[in-house]
Image (cartoon, rainbow, N blue to C red; front, side, top):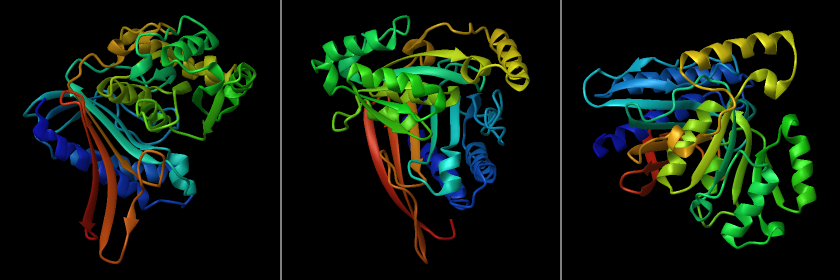
Length: 326
């Protein structure tokens, strides 16, 4: 994968972010997501690549999507895997809340995990705790190992976790352990990356979220020298019994079997992203912990993006002023 692609790939997330921003605060997350998907697809299809969407978005939220297996690009140039989330935080975009992003990861063909859009349990740490996490152990045991690796007392450790009903008992246990807990409403890519930035307070990211965000995070975390483990979970495991959840879980099990995946198996970072030759791109839609959001004036649209090159080990923070016509 040539690094000359860095610039055009950043333009893909930028286009999706601008399209989604048009629906900011309008109360319809599916319309916002649909606009971002269409913009992302159009930009990808204009590139000189032979791309395959290996993990897409939207099925959990019953939203429009770039579907798994979809071919994008002009079918010439490098063969690449693409993991996308045109809007990470569709509800946050619809409600005008912070931390909404457009994100994407690309890598050499065959190096990103091919998985259904389903739930994924994730445990992520930064470079100083690489090699110590193990999802076969309890979260409490992992936190003690991380505490030792970071040489920080357990009561000074900070963990971020999605503020969802399914995590309420876990959050209560974390408070009893004495660790500091930062919750966030939706989207865990930003929280995952923040574990790898030494100037940020997050030591650990844990929780059950979407598999697309998990694979995208894995690519970025690998590029940043961090570590991650994950497990694919069915909807019934996450949300409990119910006819709708049962049918969805049966479909997820069948799709995992067809893709050669074992439900509940611990996936290590090398299973999620096999190569350092990855590119990660994110563009802010609203202001957040990772990126500033879009700004519009009478004549211009200003965007803020982050591009991570795993092979070169570089991070580029890009502020772009576009003519309003774009």
